Image (cartoon, rainbow, N blue to C red; front, side, top):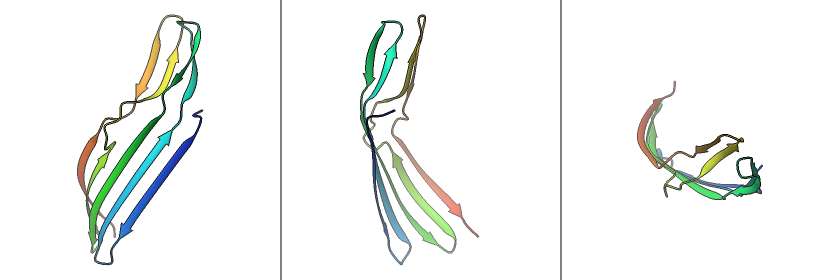
Length: 103
């Protein structure tokens, strides 16, 4: 379990349909045991920021986004045994655009 988890979000919606949203999440250090080295360690804390801007009209939602805005490099999981170690890395910076329709 992380030592702490914090998430802050802010959103702006204009009556014309324009909107913007930002999210920042921080996870604290996570302790683990490294079987290969027979010692305890900690995964570093990390902060990830995501942003989205868009425009909604007549059921359509057109938007652009960027996840992991600062391209933070981080491990989400680490596990080790006597013969091997495994780790999962967080997603790199990702840009995109999208269109949704709701009826």
